[in-house]
Length: 154
Image (cartoon, rainbow, N blue to C red; front, side, top):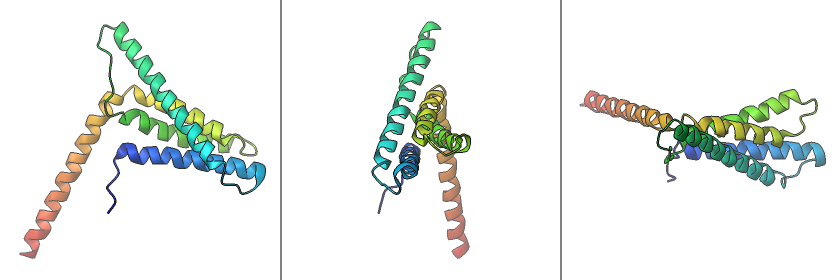
């Protein structure tokens, strides 16, 4: 069986899918149905997301050191990857809505990925504990439901 994906892996694949679809649609408008425009859309969006996350963490560390705090060293990086996915989706959607002919979809996905990742880097230290708490509550609920099912069978 395949292992269950965690939140970063789901959002990473989402970034690739949205960026690839943006590249595919933009290539289809220009050349007809071509699959070779998916890969550049994926990679450009992914690079923009990485640069946005880097910029966000750089600005965050800069402001923390100016305030006399220790710099934040992200371990889990859930915040910026979640922000990058949401930014990619909204940037592509905005470009589809705003453009008269739907052109420059990859630019919209890149712009959204950059700013989404940059904005997601700021609350990064708070997002991972929240996600862990949510997963622990979900696991506890599943456990009590399975215990209730076992007791009802007896």
